[in-house]
Length: 276
Ligand SMILES: NC(=O)c1ccc[n+]([C@@H]2O[C@H](COP(=O)([O-])OP(=O)(O)OC[C@H]3O[C@@H](n4cnc5c(N)ncnc54)[C@H](OP(=O)(O)O)[C@@H]3O)[C@@H](O)[C@H]2O)c1
Image 1 (cartoon, rainbow, N blue to C red):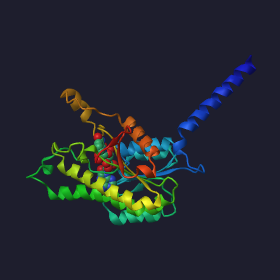
Image 2: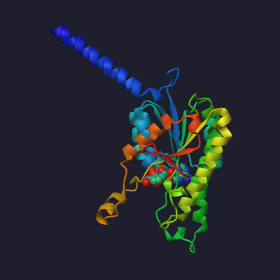
Image 3: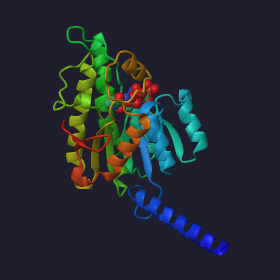
Image 4: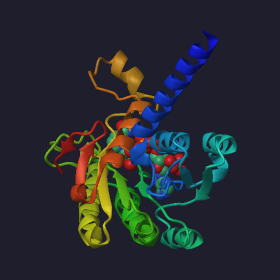
């Protein structure tokens, strides 16, 4: 009786392990080496959640942040996970991007994840007639030029991988076809994301010959600033908010499913294709 019980338990365990391996197959490499992801802006918000979830999947996570010394949550994540390495990176610092690329010149990067951005709450500085042009330049340097520079500097590392993926965490706010007319004081943010989309479509074209897959992905409306949920409820705004864990898990699945044939396309976190 006991022997039969042990046999059944062993069979169930083997079945469970096989199922897990099958589900995680897109995350494993051909020769079972550890996958590597480099994430920009990983000290908070969506970037941090990407670092947390990729770490949980066993990837090597090169988690970059502008100010690692002040990145308490990220420091705690790295303390608990040997596969998380923290690096300083400001994506507007062109020489700094090159220096980090040089430091990691021998490191294969399977997924280069351009997440960092100025999100920018609605503001009069973004309103036509009152535009703050220093603010404009900050948006463009961070949200559009940043991902372009990171993609250029780390292309050799991406080319070392068999997955060869570059990702832009974009925004539906930068999409013309989704109707970007009612900007609500976010005109410059939206323009910077539209520019980033255009740049990544061009990067997709330029890197197709190297078998690189570029994926643009919209996280949905995620309350990373901790204000939207309360405002939504109190003011009955009717916004559809996406829990951060679901958004990031969805984007990881979108990234895992991307292939060179889909390079340059724009997807919702839940997998539907979006227009630019
Ligand atoms: N949350 C949403 O609903 C939503 C919707 C659509 C798209 N997105 C996009 O999703 C991405 C993440 O958004 P989020 O909500 O997580 O934003 P967030 O909470 O404002 O975090 C932005 C991250 O980017 C970093 N960052 C800003 N400027 C940087 C620079 N020059 N160099 C390096 N890092 C820099 C920030 O670092 P510091 O802490 O140093 O400032 C922070 O880690 C962004 O690309 C955003 O546009 C978000």
